[in-house]
Amino acid sequence: MGAVNLLDFDLDGLAAFCDGLGEKRFRAQQLFRWIHQKGEADVSRMTDLARSLRDKLPELASVAAPPLLSEQASADGTVKWLFDVGQGNAIETVFIPEAERGTLCISSQAGCAVGCRFCSTGHQGFSRNLRTAEIVGQLWFAEHRLRQRLQLADGERAISNVVMMGMGEPLQNYAALLPALRMMLDDHAYGLSRRRVTVSTSGVVPMIDRLREDCPVALALSLHAPNDALRDELVPLNRKYPLRELLQACDRYLEAAPRDFITLEYCMLQQVNDTPELARQLVRLVRGLEGDAPALRCKLNLIPFNPFPGSGLQRSSADRVAAFAEQLREAGIVTTVRKTRGDDIAAACGQLAGEVQDRTQVHKRMRPIRLHASPLQGGLQ
Ligand code: SAH
Ligand code: SF4
Image (cartoon, rainbow, N blue to C red; front, side):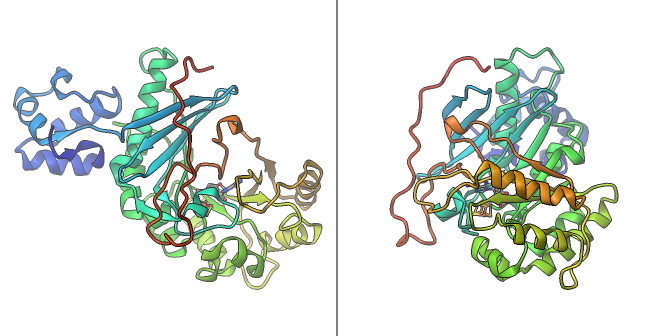
């Protein structure tokens, strides 16, 4: 099997690779479609591909998603896959079916270096960035697996939306992320529209600007607090990129996407960030009344905290979430409360722990969170 993984290449990358073999761009396009649209990994089965290319490719290249460790299906139809990314690390991918769409939640890193207080991935520390093939491989695998399992008709798609909300901070793995995003949008691959692909970030300001220039997909900002003092505690990256700079970067982002809005995510932690006073501050912040931060075109998404062992935090009660949401709505801010999906298989936001060998804080955590590799479960609901 060849050493090059073709899942690493967006169309331009694949064209350059084929060019190196003396093949035209048109051939790269054919190959690209076989891989991403048909889910074909075996070059010998790509029947309309030129014989010359079919003969050469197998010894040079392969198409390989990370090896699957387990697949779990939740009672509500959510599916979680655990993939082996080597050296004792595992990452997770989650499919969330809804009436009108199917959303895939993808990981970008093994672990995460940001270390948010309320996040299970953050508690595990950081191991390494995923390669493009490992990022897009999650989509490639899930889309074709689901088509098969759900017995979809030719041309029917299982996944209509992608959110970069799995393990890791996508904007701290930008070089690998960008080609993966391009493949998601490419009509010869997954053909998702810009608004159906969401990058969620804890706020890496310079990379928000890069993304705006390179590939302005939908942006979600993990806010979690309306002032710097509290945000410094919950999202340590805030000490480097404080709120004012962050909101200014979001404002610049919207200039590249004039009809869009930013989704602000707010993880509801009982007695920590869910008080009426903080709701008041939040309203002032997004309206541009606090300091000299700009008013922001945004929607708020409140996520009830999903507990994990050792977090020391509690989920806000339903009453407090409702009161907080009401205060925002009264101020005219579109606010939704996220329904928790798949928590019976630990697939909800912030519960994705995979298994990560921390390479940065080994002294802090010797105990990786173990996920029982469950037997494959049958039919999706
Ligand atoms: N690193 C990126 C994307 C991955 S986290 C980011 O932070 O945005 C995806 C979302 O899940 C973020 O909004 C994050 O704040 C939220 N989240 C993390 N841990 C959570 C938990 N325990 N309960 C609920 N939401 C959580
Ligand atoms: Fe990393 Fe996002 Fe978790 Fe924070 S919430 S530790 S940025 S994955």
